[in-house]
Length: 353
Image 1: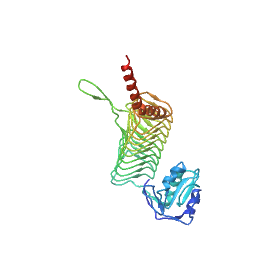
Image 2: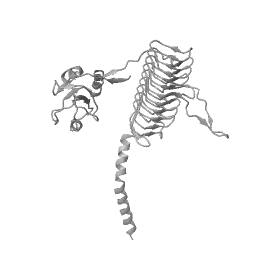
Image 3: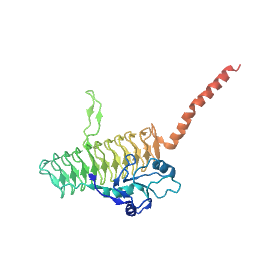
Image 4: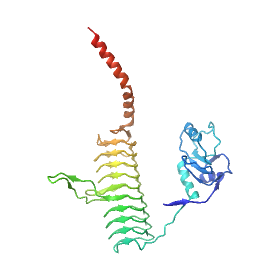
């Protein structure tokens, strides 16, 4: 979806009613837009996910916007502030509900540009938009209401599901599949060749990558992410998976439903990521690993020294349970004093007759 600002305003009391929230402040104050805490505007509403009064007080100490959405579970009676506060169950979903008030979604004209190259054998659904300079190869399939922005390339027999959106520069390789209502951001490549070679006297020989990559429904793929096709079979990305920018997903990787893959993550070939797993930014995963449903890894964690990671929270290099990592950090901080005591003990022993 593409949005542009909307010239609109709402009284703060009406805004609180719209969200089913409770207002602590001036109901007549006028809100003209939404803003972040980093770029505050005096007539806009922002939100804070602070989960304690102390954390919220730090936000309020530098707050200059028109109103702030906060958790209604917090006791605000002890806070020192004159800011308008709207108390809601969850601030982020509440802010999402306000987006249509202040931003208009640009409606795409459902046309096939005469400057697009669409092969006669391609199957095109109803209400499809194919922008200029797209290339749709033979026997490709595009479902109803799909949108292809300028410069999208579909290789032969590629399939795009109904309602999906492919932004400029996206490439869907041969026979690969995008499910329904999915979004692929600029520059992503779905179905690029996996990295497979074997040694020979003549040098490294390429292993043909004859499988496919298949994305389920409601999958989001970030800009410049690459999802490799399988060597044989499928690289399956299950429904509801969200992948950030610049991720590298190797051949035959299997990502379970509703997993989160953050930016700069690299996953080696044939690794299995469980349902609902969270892989934080710049973390890495060796090939042929198994990550359990619901497992979570912090940023820059490096998984690979064991083959299976059970449900839990992991961090560090190599990745291990956070509780273990914390104990190790305590011990590391004690090492200088332990070394000092050891040297003193050695000296004492050396001085004995």
